[in-house]
Length: 97
Image 1 (cartoon, rainbow, N blue to C red):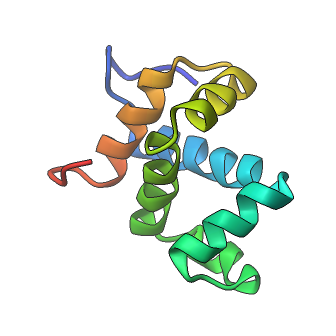
Image 2: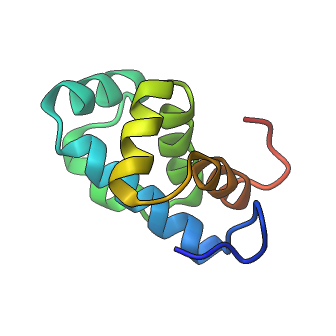
Image 3: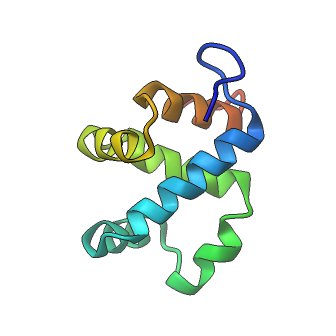
């Protein structure tokens, strides 16, 4: 994933990173249970929800609220943690994190 310019990602790159983040959390039964409990979403709704940039921003918020998880995901995805924050800004411009 290449930043469009330092600290900024295209919407498409941000969506791809958020979908990758959703897949990462879904691969860990403990994390996916916690994520589902916090969001109130049902497991069967994940695929359709992933098409919503607002939901994807929420996925990124989940990572940004847990530094350990953020760092684990960033290492897995091969991106700096700042790219995760940049994805959040791209998915929900003008909203505070």
